[in-house]
Length: 186
Image 1 (tube, rainbow, N blue to C red):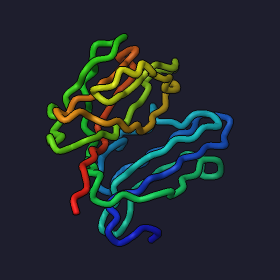
Image 2: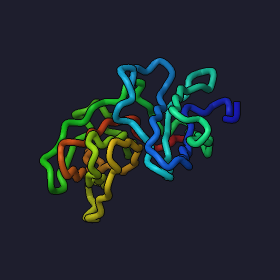
Image 3: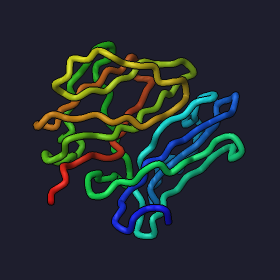
Image 4: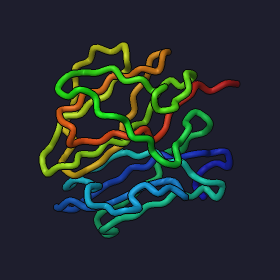
């Protein structure tokens, strides 16, 4: 394996040099994420994304690529103790659309000692949609497009009371908590 013995997850760079949308999936061993199909999980044309995923005791995760010649997955880092991965990503209820809304991570079984989230977000339509995440104390007003019929992983900090903000243009997107972060203790 190419990770340290005490690694509990890996940081991946997913790169597509393909001129078309290509289906892909990354998950923890034993997860049922995407077991029903890959109809709405693609990487865009000539695009790339980062992904974090938990690994098992044998340092393994699962990946599926529609096109191995033009879509590649590169190991770029590892996590140790500071990221807690969900074997089954936890669905987040859609907030009110069209404005920034506070969401409480405690609602989704994230412990109060957590200080950040990794969110898996997907666009479910053939049209790009605006979607954004920010720390609960932030006033940044940036929200970007999530390309049609694609998914990605985003990270955001959360307040001490486990709150983050989310902007969703429409409910034709979906968001899941893939993992949360905790402070390292010596």
